[in-house]
Image 1 (cartoon, one colour):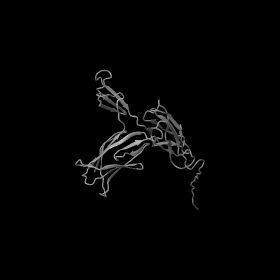
Image 2 (cartoon, helix red, strand yellow; image 1 turned 30 degrees about the vertical axis):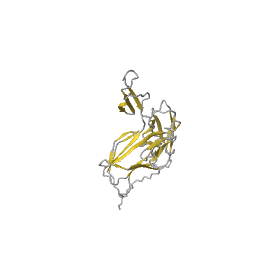
Image 3 (cartoon, rainbow, N blue to C red; image 1 turned 135 degrees about the horizontal axis):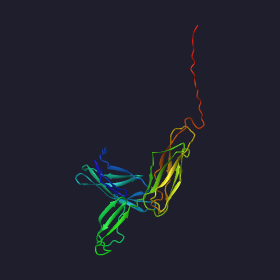
Image 4 (cartoon, helix red, strand yellow; image 1 turned 90 degrees about the horizontal axis):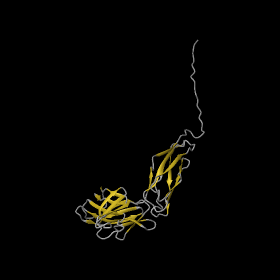
Length: 292
C-alpha cells in the first residue's frame, strides 16, 4: 500500500490518496508513473529529487521539490525521479521498508514576496484564499505608522484556455446549429489568436474561424457557432471535429498552447440519398365467385 500526500500544485490543492500495489519482482524499485500534459517541458535537476517546468524560452514557471518517501516506522526510503517521453515516474527502493509507504511531493508554483518588504514586516503571518485570489497579511508593516499593517493580494496567473462544451453537441443536415464558448484563464501581456477549422466541411462548418483576445477582453467568453451541412448521402449520423489550432502570441506563456478540440455529431436526414426518389407499388384485392 502506498499513501500519497496532497500535491500542492498550481492548479490548486488535491486530496491525498491511498493506492494498493502488488510487486512481482521484489528486487526492482517500486515505480509510480504520472502522465505529463501541457505546453511546458519538465527537466529533472541534478539532485534527482526535483524538477522544473519550463516554456520554450527556458523560463521556469514552477518547480517540483521535496520528494520524500517514508515507511510505516518513519524510515526514509531512497527515492528519485525519472522522465521518459511524457511520463514522469517516482522510483522508490523499498527493500527492507515496512508498508505502507508515504510519498510526500511538493509543487512550488511561485515564491511570493511583498513588493516593499522589509525586516519585521511579518509578511505571511496570515493567509486567506478565495477562488483565484490569495491575500497575505503583514501586520508589522509600518508604511502608515508603527505596525499599521498591510494586506497584499495575489491573483492566480496560471495560463489556460477554457472551451465549453467540448463534446455532446449536435448539428443537423437541415442547417441546425450548435455553439461553444472559449475564454482565457488568466491576464495576458499581448494579444492571443486562436483559429478553428472543421475536420469535415461536408458535415459542418464553423464561424468565426478565429478569435483574438486582447489585454482588455481576455476574460470575456467568445461564442463560436457550428452549422450542419447536408451532404446528400444517406450515411447516418456522422461525427466530426472542430479543430482548435495552437494559440499564436508574443506572450510566451500562451504561445503554442493547444486548447481542446470540440466533437460534434451531424444528424442525418436522408433516407436513400439526395434526389434518390422512391417507387411504391400498391395492390388491390380481387374477389372471385365460383358458381354453376
